[in-house]
Image (tube, rainbow, N blue to C red; front, side, top):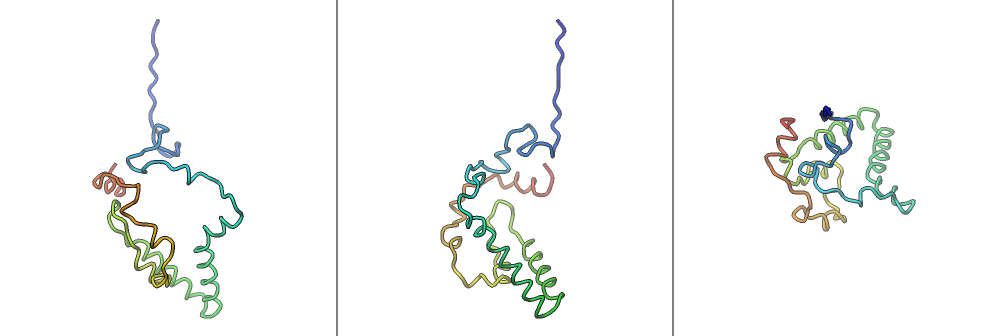
Length: 136
């Protein structure tokens, strides 16, 4: 007889996708099954973490040769170079970070086949900027 109405209040932080349990395509782009696939070969995980392992090895070498201050200084420079970004809807080249890592002189797979103009992620510039600033 009497209908009971239940209202759901979205709580941020509980749902991995969006506030209503659905992926927010405007902010995060389309979902990809490729990102959810487990590694098929034992070396695949090692290749994914190659850059991180290389940095750890370099920091350990620098620490043994020059002391504790050298890797700390390099990490601070890396962190400062990572913070230099363009607007959220523009692709950043991260030239300062490549120069610090000494990878600006080498040509890799991502340099040729990672064309930002062919990227699937393109959103509304104003909405992406407001989301990054926390206005939405």
